Image (cartoon, rainbow, N blue to C red):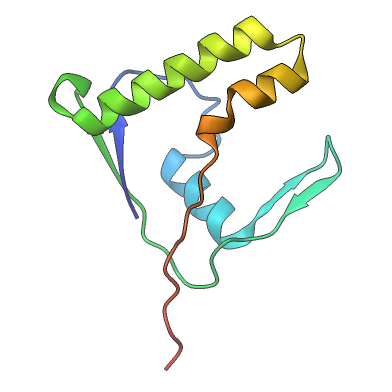
Length: 105
């Protein structure tokens, strides 16, 4: 998996790298103890994650992602007290991701 990310700095708690976190969630799933929720893994095979940090002024993909993120944030802040309107307003975000599975020999 190759991910292009904006090279803008971000702060983390430093426990895990983004690379390791992505691989962990896709390969092993997520358990959220606060909400008593388990999300099963999406992949059953090994995964290599390559992160590429780029200046957004040179990457139309990152510019598009910034635009969508800004739009989602604006809509969320305007409608956070009305969950039904918020859900209806963010319908454009719904997507389906299909990840290829390797065939076993």
